[in-house]
Amino acid sequence: MATVSLASGMVATPSNVAVATTSNYVGTSTLINADATDGIPLHKRDVDEQLIKRYGDQGITGLMELLGSKKETTAQTFEHYEETLLHNHFTGAISSNDLTIDTAFDDTGDSAGNTAVRDGDLLLGNTGVMYYVTGKADGTASTQPEDNFQLKLVSSGALAGSPADTSFAIVGNAYAERTGQPVGITPRVDQYQNKCQIIKESFTVSGSEATNAVYVKVNSPEMGTGYLWYLQGEADTYQRFQDYAELAMIIGQSATGLEDGATDGAGAAVVTTEGLLPFIENKGQTMDLGSSAITMADFDAAVKSLDKYRGAKEMALYAGMNLSLDIDDLLASQGAYAAGGANYGTFANNKDMALNLGFNSFSRGGYTFHKKTYDLFNRPDLLGGSGFNYNGYGMCIPMDSQKDAKSGAKIPSLRMRYKAANGYSREMEHWLTGSAVLQNKTNETDELRCNYRTERGFEGFAPNRFLLFKKS
Image 1 (tube, rainbow, N blue to C red):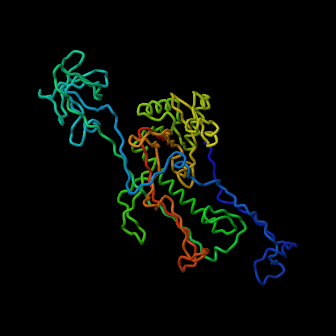
Image 2 (cartoon, helix red, strand yellow):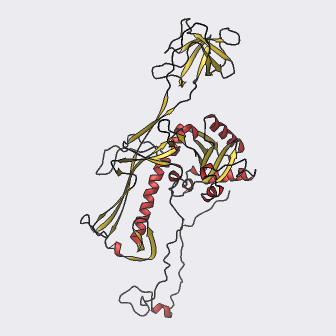
Image 3 (cartoon, rainbow, N blue to C red):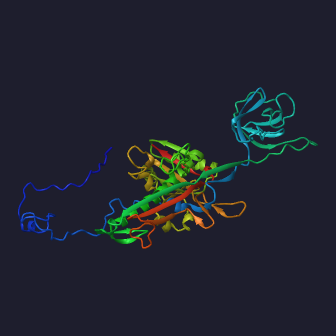
């Protein structure tokens, strides 16, 4: 496979002979006591005022702004609750008519050991055999929190014996005439919580440097436009700060046992937030593609899994360059882009809007994927650097909204939480200090300091509706 190398720099090769020409006498020397051969620095340099963006727009912010929403929080830790599956299923084993529930994979019980299995329940095994719960293995009536039950085959009424079934779903119940009511089942919920992370940045320039003009014209979103190089420093610092905040929302990991190493905060606990990528990996669905290119069979498996766990019918697929090219090749060979009834509900049913945002859309099995190459996964100074494999990742993010059962308000699939209370917000703080440049001085230090701070965290909803492709 061919590789592309990047030159280490641009090198100008000088002449091996010094020739005294007319242009040597004027415009080359910087010496005060120069002789005729040194020249006098009178020639005006022709320097273009445009600062060339060699790497284009290097900002990585946008994903959270495009797909998510924002909500303030008055606590460092924020949380919400999500309902579990309505019908209970579990793994276990049947031996000599006795069902033992596998507590390691039991989503039917509670912390006290109670299970949702009761007398009179009908259980469907993974081989299609249906069983009837008749009581405890010792012949007495089964009551919670017991976890051993005696089973009979519905088809024959005979004791279950020791069949091969290891996975079971509770599909109903049946009772005799004039019998009492069963024990009630208390619904359970899944708890989600995450924390807000404090992110800071600063830029400092001396009063002297703030008055030194340069040839190129630069722009600062906070300080304006001009021919002062500190404006570029402030602009770069602001963009870097924005990127750090976005990276925390995307790849942040929950910290354990971190302590501040700064002099003014040494020993204090450091809190970080869990970002979108770990959220999907730890709680959602993941498909490991290995080193192979993605196939239509892979997409079919993804669609089946999304459908099984109630995935959104419309997904944003943010893919690294390697995965994005594989998908392009796969779909181009089948003419699948914008085929199969692709819809653009997220883009107000406007195909042009989707294209303007850089999305290519295709449908499979009733699921529409809006694919976009995600620059962050291919950035050489970030996740696309040597040794990283994020350019083979692809995040499938639901693009519909759920409704809050209490308020009726729409809840997005993800959002950013930020600290705020009593009119004070820490979503984005920016302030200036020093005695240079500023009309209103704040201290005696001959400098201008630009300060940035935010305290925010990532919040994801229903991780079962997200899917992550991983290609090594």
